[in-house]
Length: 332
Ligand code: FAD
Image (spheres, rainbow, N blue to C red):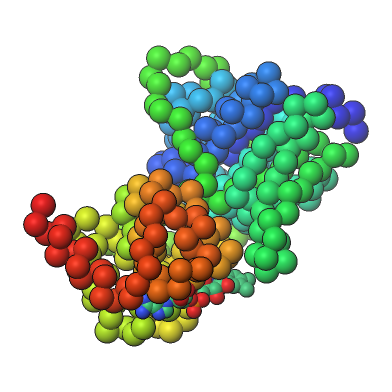
């Protein structure tokens, strides 16, 4: 393998029902930054059926080139046709770096593609950077049960592949004046590639809370004390138009649903305000919320780790302080 044959950054664009997933736009933002550091270009790869119309949107969000493959076989995600199409495009484009969102689809397709094109994959990254001297991608992810952050490189193989958690990178401002190249790729798929038959598609309940999109999160830890005390968090969330989330301890206690868990084994969030109430600040929790714009914490222990990542810390009993904050907010 001649490493210098591989050039550019490629982002796999995940679309569901022709809707580009947020993580893909976030990866275009990060991909653009890396491409600029390496003085190279950013390519977006779009797979699906009747999806060409989405290509310009990808250019507006930073792509210099869009390679799309349109086939009825790609209408719904099934791993074999998608793996085949993405592998072929990578083999043809020869990018130096490939980024995929660490969603259920990304986690399915990325390892299959990596195996097929015989390269390594660093899964579930939370930070990416690049060493402009060696062109090595510095891929950082939690390791050893989340107790350390490991930075991994792939020095001998190309492309360097990484899946990246949703919510940790920042998408670029949409710029509709941007121009880019849009190219169709024939993945040469046939019905024989469809080795899975879809019997039924069960859509996610849209009314369910999506803490990843919330601008304000009122987050509970074990220090809240009981399920009944959770009511004070909902009262505070209301005037702030926020959602309620929690640490794993709270989910394990059955005080909140699993979909509201923040952290390494929950969701990664980046709200404008993260209000941590009775949360210790364990590394596995902090990994999921430290990028929040403003972090306010209440903890009765002045040495709690959560204060190290907080912009404002309040030492005291959360169940007593939260109603006072709510009362003041209601006066505004
Ligand atoms: P505790 O650690 O029990 O802390 C409670 C805090 O509340 C303390 O700081 C205490 O001082 C404070 N307190 C007590 N009473 C009050 C009061 N009246 N008022 C104010 N403060 C009070 N955790 C996650 O959150 N998300 C994850 O995704 C996650 N993934 C994990 C993955 C692995 C592999 C492992 C090993 C662990 C994971 N954990 C995760 C668990 C994590 O290590 C912690 O155990 C967990 O975050 C602790 O939750 P907590 O801070 O709510 O509870």
